Image (cartoon, rainbow, N blue to C red):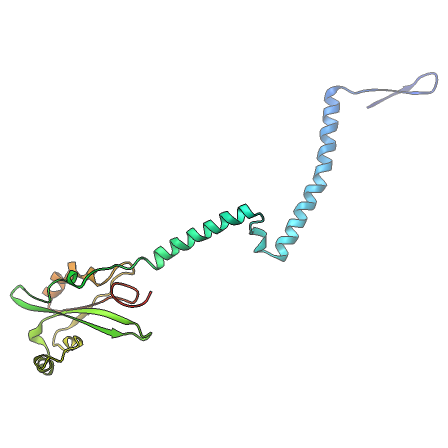
Length: 200
């Protein structure tokens, strides 16, 4: 409002400003009213975050909590798929023949089990040359006493093949030709939680 000079009776005359002036005045009053409230909210939120940092990001309403649980469950499933993938299942015949010849050289496969330090039973296969076995083990074979592990008592150097965390001992099969040609025997276990071995 603009103040005008007094009239002869001593009354002060006033006139309304332009619509634009009124609009500016209203906007100015609204901003000045809002600023203290928003400043107070910001101060309260900062204080709450300082007292409970984790709670500052937690969902407040039931709908948000439901979405948060769905996200967390999906995240856990993804982590399980990476760290604990599904077990590869197979039958013993998938390991191939027990005995065969490769390049005129006899090859045998011995399957056996042993327990690891956690007491879990692990299943293994050992591809080797039976003609290079230790003499005492050949005697045990003739007597029918064979746990399978005796195949490790051989003159052959032994290569231990460890599969990846998403596989099992079947992974070594495509490599057998190359490895056996080099003159080594090949030992391939199912690690715990994989293939036929115990564990998760």
